[in-house]
Image (tube, rainbow, N blue to C red; front, side):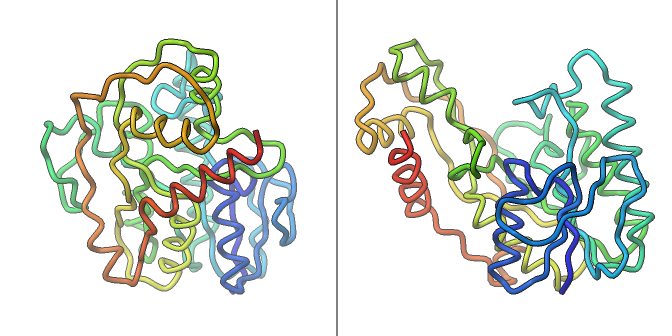
Length: 275
């Protein structure tokens, strides 16, 4: 299948491109630059007319935000954030009508739900972050067009593409410098496992799908990193607050099999070798 991918050179998009190519798809990267993983390239920016000719499917992973921030990614320009991400996405969906569409949404659509809520795709939602609101409104627009799927992804980790820094690079640098690090706990999925989900969803029934794997405490992560990379820093206390866990049954029924702690250790070993 010939698949157009927006955000193909981003921290998440690069995993999607690699996974689709590994699954035998013909990938067209829509963006400012070609993907380092291969495929072809067509120049494009969010909000412009998309060059989708001869593409049978679209994976939309592009998102404009303040560097390093998703929630709060609007910075001091919420209107510009909405124009780029919501209006640009709605235009793209209309242009892609008739093709298979996979939209990279976010667990941020569940923002504001009470602690202890199992996160299933059928919950009534009213996210309390602008980021989550934009993702949810885009999901709704795609559903009204019919035939698309929204992948509600948690935090995505993994070795970076050439020239990029991975999502924990700043954290690991601070740890190596001996800085005090605040406790935290989050949910994570390896980028390659997310890419596997995208490939499955190209042929799946329309709707929303949760994508998450590990519940990872920052202390446990840094203990692993210290062992593998030889970094000696001050470990934070274990977090006393865990996020709500996403139920991924809908995705697993399709055959999705994330690799859990084995994927985490493989990624950390790769990152350690690059230090």
